Image 1 (tube, rainbow, N blue to C red):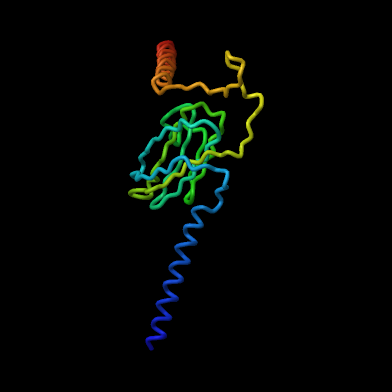
Image 2: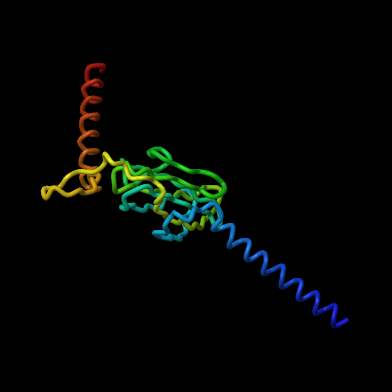
Length: 186
């Protein structure tokens, strides 16, 4: 009886160890060796709310997010630092793992919005940020500096204040035009 009980405990321990190892392998599955892990971000987000992050790294970046509880969705833009489901360039809104590849030609900083789906009171997420080294360097993307040496061309950086100033001017013009149209009509 004790031999059968110890065998049962041993089998149970082996199955638990195997399931633990397979879950670790699932996390690393599908991630090429050429990708370099830059950051791991974990957080909680309430239903219908956003959490915003800023990406400053140049190059092709892969955002790999999984919801640990609930359902968090991913929205990315190089036009606004606060992307949403109304204003985004790239998105992943699945019930499973969310993956977005940020191209190297996106203007930095890139805004990342994480949205907590309203079906869940709170969503917990983990996002891994990878640098994709497999992208070959474009030989025409090099600029010469004053010393005659080769220097990597940098994408222009737009601050949030500059973007909001441009946005403010745009809305001022639109509102002014609407006032003129309404004045003519009425």
